[in-house]
Amino acid sequence: MQETGNKSILKHAILNESFDGLKPEGYDLFLYVGPESFSCLVADRSRKEFIALESWSIAGSEIGEIPDLLISIRSTSSIIQNNRFRRIICCSGFRAAALVPNALFEPSSAIEQLQFLVPVGTENEILSDEMRQLEARHLFAIPTGIYELITSWFPTVEFHHTGTAMIEYLLSKYKNHHEPLLHINAGDRMAEIIVNKGKNLLFYNSFEIHTPEEFVYYILFVCEQLHLNPETLKVTFSGNMELTDAAYMLTTKYIRHTGLNDRPDNYSFAEEFDQILPHQYFHIFSQLVCAS
Image (cartoon, rainbow, N blue to C red):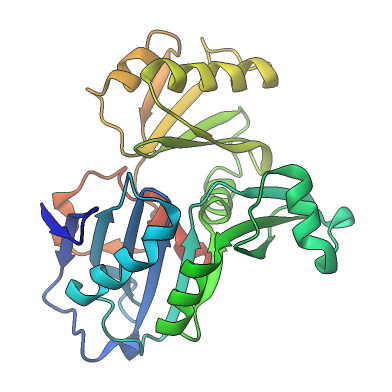
């Protein structure tokens, strides 16, 4: 793995031969930034195909260190040195986020509404997503230093939350499914849990995870709160999770029906993407719904 700076490690670098970094005007660029990783993904809009991906681990970094790490990463990236992409979307993976019903949402007091629901520091930008399949807004905070850096690179960038992208995709994909489904997007030290029943969102939250036992505890906690039967519930995993991981193997002792997610099917993937597993990077592939 390639190290850049002190705490960033290049995990994957995928470039299809068709990618031309000097002529990005026909491409859409998707960025993901969170406390554990930074990724960039390129889609060729005319071919409806993903053609490039770079992902860096920044786990163990303090929030204040991330802007300098991103500057160092950009200097070595084959994708993001140019800023003339057709459209640029950046999803935040920071945990300070909450869903608010439209009837209660007040744009002028968004920061107070978010602070009432989750802890939010003062050095944050407060943004919101319209949940198009729900009568709700998704409020979220992104550290100001990161927000300002990315907007300085890409003045036309659109910010969303990764939870918005995954929820919208899953509600659309499983809109005709009549039983509850539980989806887990696993990171190195956190996990996002989404539960839906058809087009109805039953639960969404993220949890900080330190051990396999904690991982399973939160799954069973959600099952208990929603009165879901672990013997019949279908649970799917995406992100940093493999069948041989201790957390997955422990989960199978309590949940009968488990499996790994497939890639979103709204775009095709260049053959170079075969070097990564289909359930990896679900959080950035699903951002395509934010561009529709």
